Length: 88
Image (cartoon, rainbow, N blue to C red):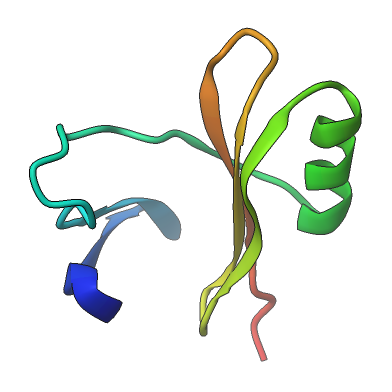
């Protein structure tokens, strides 16, 4: 998965409960990022923006898995949004 190396998914029940990867910024502290699954990533990201969120990473495809965006809400909390790719 690019320069950060491999991405390990954590399986929970029938879905993915999380993932782990090497921090992409050498020397930066470790961090956790919670994601909320949404039905329409573009609409949810746009709604967050309209409510005052700062979009750190706009909608980005994670090939073969889905789409994500990362935002900072008006209180300063960082949150990820996720839309799972529909099965073929």
